[in-house]
Length: 473
Image (cartoon, rainbow, N blue to C red):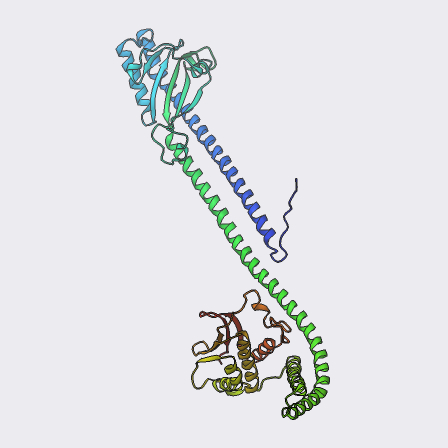
């Protein structure tokens, strides 16, 4: 069996904090629920103790009133207590009802020492025999006995804050004694057992409401605090992760620039040394080519090949120099529309040879600030790149968006591969069999110098789309 340890992502250092936060939240929630249970149990014990004391006081009061106002006068007047006689029974009933008035007593009965009911609030319960039980036995021994009787309808009724009447009843068995002054015993002789029931539902409703209120406050507070903590951590996580990614991008760019700078210095030095003898070779090849044009033979083809390759090599050397030693743009008023027309005029023969049409959707003038020569070089490279992307007849579309200050150049070629879009402006990256891979890198440098953004995407009509966004002053 493999044990997988929690390993946070270095780019997201707050993952461990989130994990610990969730763990602590569960612990806090569990402790809160435990505290709610403890508080609820303590509150129930307090209520039960209060009602026991209340029932004890009521039992003592009943014992005193029954003995003083009924038992003693009856014994003195009649010689003995005989509740079978209507007059004595009515007298006891008056004393009991006067004593329990306002005390929420549901029922009350007096049992003799054999467990038979000799008096009850409901006279129909008399006589009943063998009504003893645990409460009767405890009271007969001289100790009061209290029992909670619950009458919920179902197992989930404890969730209901509005309890039905008489759902919680306290049943008390209390020893009925003779007064101490008239009894040789210290506590008084037990002459009967007093049993009565009280409705304590309202007290339990108070406890349930209190417990519900405590539960809501604790859970709400825990959720609120956790939510605030979680949002702070999440926000800090996003900010820190973004800073780490930005740092990595800057470090990568710095490393790349350092590498390219050293390469650029070397390339510039080599290109400069090649440029002078290459100029001599190119001019000599041009002269040989012009002389051999009068003759139709192998010498003519060889001179033409030398001349074309020298031109291509000259362009390659120029690309290296343009990238290695970028020219600082001289900002002045420029008509971008005129620069576009100049680029298209230079490529007119190439466009006709490949049967490529140009669809313009630009105004007559597009004034902006920039370097005319550098903008010409950038647009020339973009248009020649679109031209080379189409092997046969096609169309190049040039559009100017005035509201956003964007120039769009699209073609009907195969389009751009989305997986390679981020690499197009990297130096020496090319998808062509021939080329240095510096064309778009030079374009990017020129546009960066003009404060413009360069983006590649797919055109809605199909093919590739290059979008240049010029900054507005």
